[in-house]
Length: 436
Image (cartoon, rainbow, N blue to C red; front, top):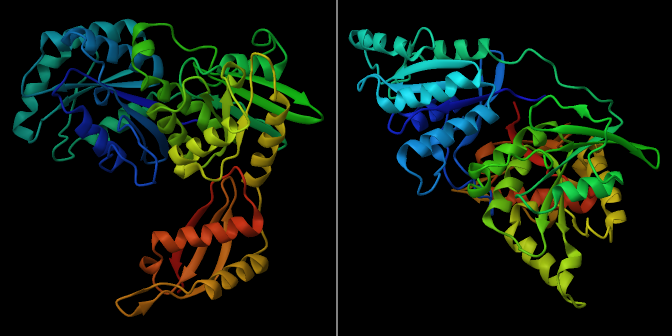
């Protein structure tokens, strides 16, 4: 299910990040606690009543050395491109400023739904300060306080009223949906064309459910597939060319709709931090993942080159130890035949369900091999384990005290499960529950 997107826009110092953290219900840190994952704090998920949605904090992205008003304009334009609903945030203590009016002009031309919020209205006596904001032309301003969490319910009620009513395209269970994500210029468009055997995106494309993806259904050897292509529609413009963080926003909806995500890396340029950020979102979303090293034809190599680059990728992508790596060239189509079998394997493992009795035999053997940890004289007891979901495979371990299942022992159990059942290409999740 594709979630609607809310973007928070406004000039600096109006409290965008505070409201962002309030809406998503947590303080988003720069560094994720999964080893090897670094994460921008500009994007997260939220929920309100029956609605699940994603939130963008445009102020969390540094445009660079652009002049003050130019930065505001660029951030607003990105929000217009990426969001379904825009929260226009202002500062009630300072009143309407010239920068607010500049943002208003841009948003007014966008034709996107805009909800006007006046922040820092910390008590009822300050509500008279919102009336000046009617002049911005977006109807009734909603008074809120990020510091105290006041008025956010009214704000989200109004934002939810504007969520898209259209339903996403549904495909059958036998269709494997996969997307290609990665930085600009890693060869995503060329790879799509190589897979499809076309020199362009095929004419019969179905328009996707978002403004930034095209679905390309096709069949191969009796298998049914849909490529969710974000590559061919990347915006041409200064913001997208100079600020790589926005390529994450480009990929997010495609990730949500995919079963398998291809993380495409440019063999010529190697790995940079942005590759890890984009892959981190796919991992957190629980999607099956295949790492694709493209432009393999463009580098000088000997018999050691592939092993050395694979080792380097494993070092950088510690959190993707389960993801297979495919080396190929979209340009020459060399090794392109190795990709689809790997996609199939990852997709099958993503949906794999194991028998409870066999699973518990594996867990008990693991405990016998490596006894459970103790903490202050208390020992973890594992009673039984069951698989509760697929896509990704999810396991619940019933124990005496969940807090005794330390991260290191959880990782040990995951490795034993992988040794027994494979699960190549898919993350697996393990949760501890107290047995009642």
